[in-house]
Every structure is written in C-alpha cells, then in structure tokens.
Image (cartoon, rainbow, N blue to C red; front, side, top):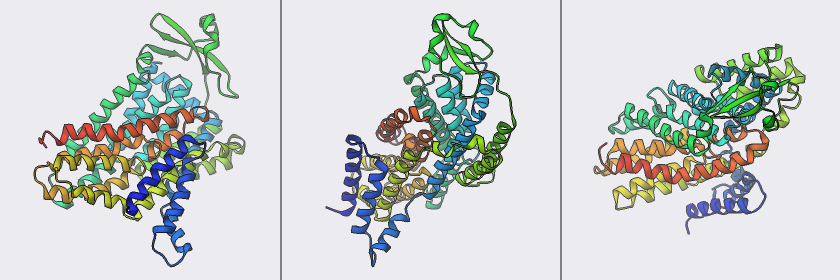
Amino acid sequence: MSVELISILILAVIFVIATVRPINLGALAIVAAFLLGIVVLEGADLEEKTDAVFAGFPGDLFVILVGVTFLFAIAKGNGTVDWMIQASIRAVGGRVGLIPWVMFGITACLTAIGAVVPASVAIIAPIGMGFAVRYRINPILMGLLIINGASAGGFSPISIFGGITNGVVDKAGLPGNPTLLFLASFFFNLAISVFVFFFWGGRELLGRRVDPSATEADAPAEAGAGGHSAPAGEPGTTATLTSGRTQQTHEVPADIGLDRDRALTLVGLAILAIGALFFSLDVGMLAITVAAILTLLSPDSARNAVSQVAWPTVLLVCGIVLYVSLLETIGTITWLGEEVATIGAPLLAALIICLIGGAVSAFASTTGILGALIPLAVPFLTGDSSIGAVGLITALAISSSVVDSSPFSTSGALTVANTPEEHRDYVYKRLMRWGFSMVIVVPLTTWLIFVVPGWL
C-alpha cells in the first residue's frame, strides 16, 4: 500500500475516532501528522522531521481566528455589537427575513471588489451570528448565507479567486471566460442560498417583524416568557414580533447610545475593515492590534475577552489544516491528480478532478487550493479536446469554493468560532454535515451543468 493511500486512510480513521469518542479532532490530527511525518519524511534526525511537520502549521489562520474572536468579544462585552444590531434592524424596517440577505449581499460586494474571502467573512460573521442569536434566526441559515455570499462575489474579474483562476488559465494558453466564471459562481451560490434560506426556517422569518420601539406593556401577556434576555448590563424592552395573525415577544435592548468605549470600538472595526479590504493588511494581525489598543484604553470592557476566544475551534481547525499540509508535502494531492490522468474516460476524469477540488478545499484554504489544483487540470485539458476548458475550469472553481462552508475551511472555521458558545457545537456539527454533502453534491451538479453538455 502506498504512503499516499495510507495518509488518506489515517485521515478517515481519526475522523471516526473523534466522532465516537469525546476528543478534539484537531488534537488527533496533530498527533497523526507528527507520527506520519516521522515515518515518511526525509531527514537526518527526528528534530529535522518534526520541523518539517511544523512548517505546515497555519500560523496565519491561527492569528485570524484568535484575533477576530478576541476583538469581537470586546465589542460584544461593551455593547458595540448590540448597537450595530439595533441600527441594522432599523435600517431594514424591522423585517427579520431580510437580515440574512443583507449579510449575503454585503459579503458578496466585498469579495467582488477585491476583498479576500476570509477577511470578508471575518468582518461580517461576528455581526451576523449576533443577529441570529438575538432574533431567533437559525445560526446555520445565517452562517451559510454569509459564507455563500463571500463565494458568490469571489470570482469577479478583480477578485482574488478570479485573479488566480484566470491567471492560471491565461498562462496555460487555455480559452477562458472571466465574466461567465463570475456569473456562474454568483448565481450558483445564490441558488444554494435560496435553498438554505427555506430549508433552515426562512419561510417563518418572512412574516416576522421587529418593532424596537415596542414596550413590554404593548406585548401580549401570554407570550411574555418566550423572549431572550437582554445583554448583561443593558436595560431591556420587549419588542413585538409579528407573524401573520399571531404575535410573539422578543427581548431586544432598549435604545443603546454611543458611549466612549463603543465609539472607540466602532473606530477600531472601521480600521480593521479599511486596512484589510483596501490596504491588504493581514486581518488577524490587524484585529489583534485593534483589540490590544482597545484593551489599553478600556481595560474593564476587555477583562474577560481572552477567555471568550474559541480555543477548541482554533485547535480543531489548525490541527486538521496541519495534517492536510503534510499530505501536500508528501505528495498525496499530486498523486491524486496523477491517478486521475490515467483514467480512460474523459468525462469521468473531469468529475473526479472536481471531486478532488471539493474534498481538498473543504480542509484547507481555497485560495491556496485553486493555485494548486487548476494547474493539475491543465495537462488533462490540453491532452483531451473533447472536454471544454471553460466548462471544466468553471466547475472546478465552484466545486472548490462552495465547500468553504466546511468548519475545517477558513470561512467555516470563522463562522463556528464567532458563534456564541452555547450554539457552537450545534453549528459545528451541522456545518460539517452540510460541508461534506457539498463535497459530493456541488462537483456532481457543476459537472452536469458545465462539463457534460459540452457547450463551454
């Protein structure tokens, strides 16, 4: 049995163990990477081999997860998140059903104009997940619309994903269609989001409205026990949720003013957005910098923020990405691509390429995977004229990006990490099921649409 196949089997085994036993999957992945690296990596001694394993540790992802959750823990603690939620609810006229779509549209616009997908999700996810908990929106619905929105705009001609994909195609001398790639990705993600919206309770949201100006006396007495409590330290009023002919009460904060700490936090969040989106500054480093400055300026509001960093999620995601990085180092990913090239049926080979793209990207950064997998498809495309290059590249690009909903991919990990602790396990498990289902569903669907008909 080859080393490449053994490495894939080990990954499957640790998934099974973490499913049936209460142990962090990331910890298992680190152990597996350490042991496998010692056995298969070249080197004069154990220290050299261990250093080679550690070289794959996702330091940038670690800093992003810690920095963003640290910063938004401060923003939540001093009431800034509640202020933003209240202002946004008023902006949409209290229509709860519009909130997830506003999040979808914002992230799509950010990535379409060139923002890095993880940076956009890092900025929007904490706010969106706060909305979800406050207004009883299913957190999976909210999280997936944010992630899908980022992917929807991710392949515009001026975006990072679009630039990588179109650049590889141009360099290989293959025919390309940047506009078609962008539109195909946008409408594919939009269609999935419509399904997500109604599957995870969106129909009920359509008839629900929030009136932040309502008081407890305005609400029906029999519904008074059904609301959520107001944030600690904040006065609460009971707003009325209207759905058809019935009314429900829901606790929302009373008018929240902009005190010194909240104003400083908003300035910090603006600096984070501007620096990440327009100056390409690392979102993790910038988030920690802003958080540290806010802590110095207002120690009381940041007293418990570090303890609210999603440390189990950080261990989980970084451990898995470390193991996948080792797979790339020992040639498992390249081996998979070479095996595909030996398949005699071109259409089947094209499907397998898309499946590999989805499966690998579900465990790693899509940005890096696009740069690695599209070149693997180039020899196949140049050697078989029966498969349309535009169709396969489009299918592969969408297959590799939609699976960002996996909790082991950067966008999915950020969504889980920014979910309140009491809902985090629920979101993690369902994002894992959804993400893994997308590994199969999306490649098959895009293959049927863009490759099989031969029209591209």
